[in-house]
Image 1 (tube, rainbow, N blue to C red):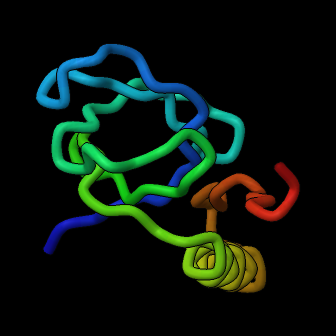
Image 2: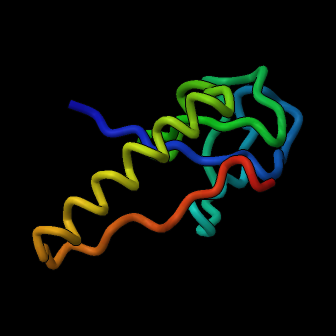
Length: 95
């Protein structure tokens, strides 16, 4: 099973579709990712990232839904007193 993490594309660098990269915001943490698999992506859109590559584009409603599930998981950890740190707060509709 693979794990893809949603994030918001903040910037695009490069012109060649195979070598373009983007800065993706994961709850305040910016990472450089490959955009080769999503050449049509635009700044401000949400993407699913796996192994350093954006593999699909999400609309804002889908991103909000994923962030809600992540928040619910974090609350479950807190209620059980688990020592695993919950994921950071996400606010897709705020920017």
